[in-house]
Amino acid sequence: MGLVVGGLSLRKNNSFKNSSGETVTVKTGDVDSDLCSQFTADFIYSAINKSVAYVEPSEIKGIFSCKYYTSYSQDYYKIGDGKTMPGGPWFSLVLDNLPIENQKKGNEHLGYKVSTDPQIKMENMVVRQEDGNVNAIYLVINPNRFISIRRSSTTVISNEEHLLLAARVAEKIQGKVSFPLKKNPVEIKTEKKEEVGASQKQTASNFMQFLSDKKWDEAVRMMDSDAGDKESWKANFATIKSLKVLKVEPVYQEEWTSSRQVYKFELEVSVSDQGLQMGWENGKNLRWVGLQKNGDVWQVHELANNP
Image (cartoon, rainbow, N blue to C red; front, side):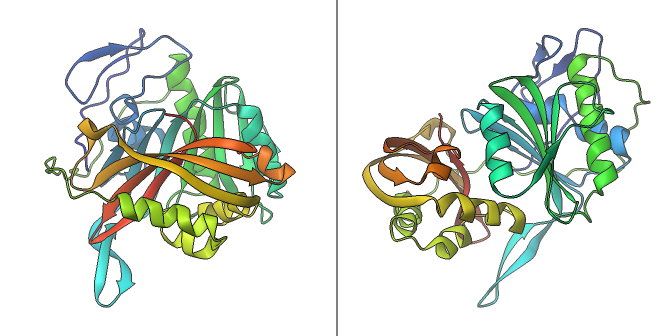
């Protein structure tokens, strides 16, 4: 669902108004989980001169994100049979509480080059693909907490803008914003929160069944990730030797809407050595599957290994 983000508010004590209108003060060097309110559309426009047309927050516990669309339409994706799904080109900030070392190992296993960039004034990890394009940038808050900055393509923000945005997000985290503040010139559309939709437990179970059957292409087609992330997920799934669902249950139902649901899976898994570096364990594993309805289709929006 879309979210209106208010005017940019950068104070020395790093305070901001969250989406509920409450004042939140964040300790310098860390961030609040309400990323859309802390890093507003105004902040993005001020940071890299890129206007934002639509903002989409995600508040699944343990993984918090804010996706910024430079344009947005209800029929952006064509999915066959005359059906469409909403969307547009985007870039995002994602807050995760996972070991940064595992992210480094996982990206290196995929053949990506991992380095640091001196213009980013905090501990960082810049991940580049074989073609030299930036895949993701990680801002390391502590060894088990980081913000990653991702994008749908190099056309939505260039490599230079990707690095500049990371540098200026780092400034905000450190409470040392050095650039002038401007108002995002585009009016951001909003949507009202909808009623809870019918259970999509079978959809989530179908996704896990594809993993059990080693049908990686079918599994990633159920995900609403961009093409690059889907390839990364396929590499991750390919480390699975066997997977069996022991239990599935709906969770966080108080946060459900007609377009968002979450399910917790208890799995029995066997993986290769590479899988052990990508967050899997041999034996019991827990996974949280966040589903999102895009148009008329429910898709896997998040796959997390912690609540």
